[in-house]
Image (cartoon, rainbow, N blue to C red; front, side, top):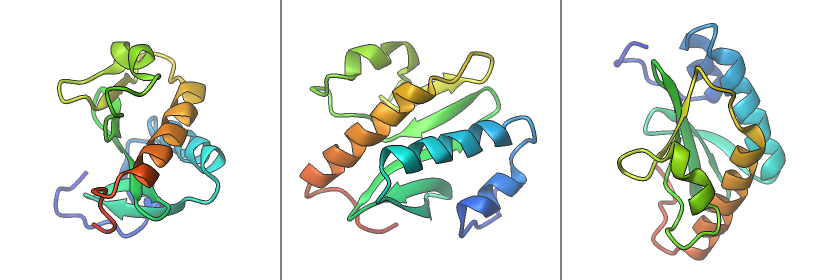
Length: 126
């Protein structure tokens, strides 16, 4: 991706990712839409994102993994399940050479939506 590209929609983002990664991101998008059906698509930090009242989940393609942001609160019951995917800052990294755990990602999206609903400090725009 060209670092100077400014995306305004998820479709624009998907149009420039590697062809072998695009179907993974399209499935991820659908999984999040089904998990949190009242969420709206947006772009934030030049990544695909979803919001309800607040932004609650972002994802991005990298050379060797799919990144999912932000991290869940440490007390969320899913945290232990996510340890194999945890990055250095708590973000999640799903290696492209392994099967993507879409059912787990759906649960993450639901948890992040609930987390954002409870958090007055969550960003409303970006």
